[in-house]
Amino acid sequence: MQEIHGGDIYTDRRIRLDCSVNINPLGMPRQMKERIRGSEETWERYPDLQMRRLRGGLEEFYGKWGAPLCADWFLAGNGASDLIYSLAFALRPERILLIAPCFCEYERAFSAAGCRTEAFLLTPESGFSLEAGRERLFARLSGPKRPDLLLLASPANPSGRAERAAFLTELADACGRAGTLLIVDECFVWFAGDAGTYSLAPFLARDPERFRHVILLGAFTKIFSMAGLRFGFAVCPDPGLRRQIEGVRPPWSVSGPAQEAALAAPDLTAFIQETVRVTGKERAWLAGALERLGFFVFPSSANFLLFRRAEGDETDYAAHCRKRGILIRGCAGFSGLDERYCRVAVRTRADNEALISCLEEACKEWRRQS
Image 1 (tube, rainbow, N blue to C red):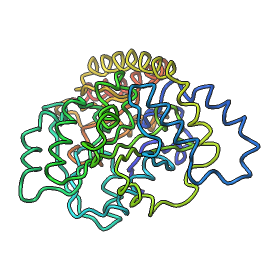
Image 2: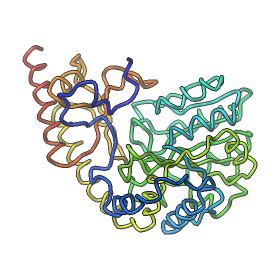
Image 3: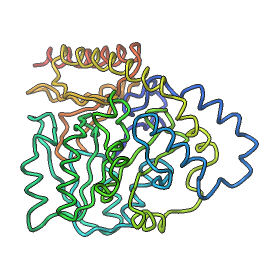
Image 4: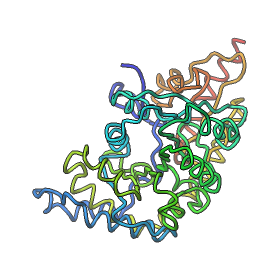
């Protein structure tokens, strides 16, 4: 099977360290685990179809971050990927522009729904900055073949690049003038350290009419290490669009334990702040260590780093690491990238040191042969 995601620790039992998935190095917070254990008696009941407590919890969570979103605006699902497919089958836009390189499920979902997608490729020279491609993008939005839907992530996967919310509001306004629906995936925004600088949520809260053509995607999968439980959500201020999306949603898509875990989020402000501190410190250390090995490391605001091997180096670093029990993400499957690029998660110092030792071994071997 072609590798399209990280996290395949099941094919090879020798894997001892997974640096291919971007999960919070602090793990799942204690408060979430306690809520899950305390909800055992409810598991025999169907969860609330309307997810009323859950929507209220999301409203409270965002309110603590200066974005008082309305509870009715939330749509919840079995991870953000579940909602991406719902958006594709509900909206079925004719022309879709994907800001790339990007998460492969965007294209897979809309292609499955019979839609045509086109990649708007960002350049490594700009650090994969969308704002650096502003003129090209705005020209596309005002041209004759303007897209019906524009989809981007901030911070982006696999680059880790986060765009300023001030720029994203300008982009949203340009999309509004073009009649283009804008979807912004903010699943990694909590790692960026300043949601007010990067998230569009406060702007939606203040002026929902201006941004009624904007949909935000979020998830607790990464920030709260809920990859096994699964929980994602969308923020959609337009009631007509919400009804359209809800029309294709399966019932009970969020399990009772996942809903209980998510309800702990409003009490986890300090946990997120500690995550930002630890991740920022380890990201800087890991980036420096990779650069000392001779890799080019792209700037990141997320809990992962994209790096490129040196000119003339043809080492398959993902394969080298796998043979030694460590998974990293080869990026040849991402639009605009090739086998020279790899992505690694920011983990604890011990894990990061183990990864660097493994990569250093491969680098020494390449230098001996060159």
